[in-house]
Image (cartoon, rainbow, N blue to C red; front, side, top):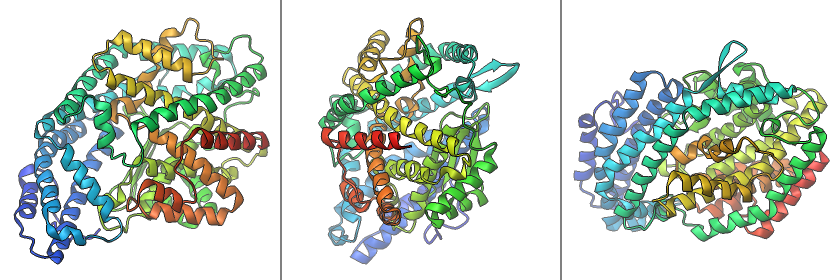
Length: 563
């Protein structure tokens, strides 16, 4: 994006320097629609500049959590810039909504945008600013704690992500040994993570009370701008998944147990190949992962491959796991340069391929909507954003021969992917239901939290896995889910999007060219249309009723049988 309002050489260093732009926007008179439109574009440009600066601070910090200078840089933004930006940003939003000329903003996307602005104003409370600052500081501590976790194995210090390689080892004793080491290491941080979560729940509840809500669940639902579905819809989704997806997980685990010829199916047996074959290794290093992803995406659409190639050329990929790197993976949109960043922790396994095409789908979304006028248009809700990524997982699967030249390995890879689709929905429902309980019972004790999680896992966990002697491991399993700590309630969107992705893939199986064109057309809308309208543009329904979930699960089951 070429700057037209913010000086080309300007960098976000102090609030005092940044404030001059906000002050000018607040004082500028608006006496016509043209002046309002110019003001809005300038406000948008400033937002893009600030957003990208904050993004880079976060990216650099997660790439090296041991670097105190990088952590201090991020904290400086959170402590000294964002809190001062919040009240004036709210006043600018009020200025926009008070303008009589806003009624002329009837171009595509603006009704959605103005609805979001009004929602932000409705939820803004100045007394929540310091609480939100505290929350952001606490939320990053999860990455610091998790990023420092490692184990010693075979004389080498490895991350817990790399330890996952050994959980696929054909030697059951090796798997158990590594599993025990991982759990022992996680147990060392159990109390710290509980204490951290207690602080987060308390602060989040206070934010909700300050805004006039009885609980954080209801506050967050509105803050996430869930205009197209209700809290009750989420609860209904939980029950639909319990009814139509959980039985498929049990069916799959029973089949694995039988194939592995095990009397007891234990937690360390859930990742090993059921046919006694070594783990799939679709690539050996980051460069090979990049090259093969580009080749795979090219077979779907050359534009997709070009997106990844551009990111690689601009050093927007940090893919390999290392000690001191934050866990997980993400794609971070960069709204000024319009070329996003992908962060992940690959160790050469099949799941890393899936993570890469998932985050690649997010990145393609960023490329497809970068020409939209406002940053907010390029910031769709997660129900749309995750549709982009999860659909890419399944569509790209039709071209995974790039990664697996051996037909038997390709078959195994596809079966593993479909197994993960089936497994994902119960876990998503469990995490979301857990959060509903946590934030509607904000005074709960740690013991009550563990008891509720165990009850939830009885409904959504596998009944085949034998946790005897490992009950404590299951009880704290929720602590691995970073969303609970860093982005509360951002998880059920994966469930809705998974259903949408299955429908997109079903369309791709029928007519690849048409499905890709619909996929691109939907993503290019960004957030200029409602969620159901974007899904319709993709040729699918925004639906999570029991009947629709059963229909899609039956399709996945059938395709699994055909692989």
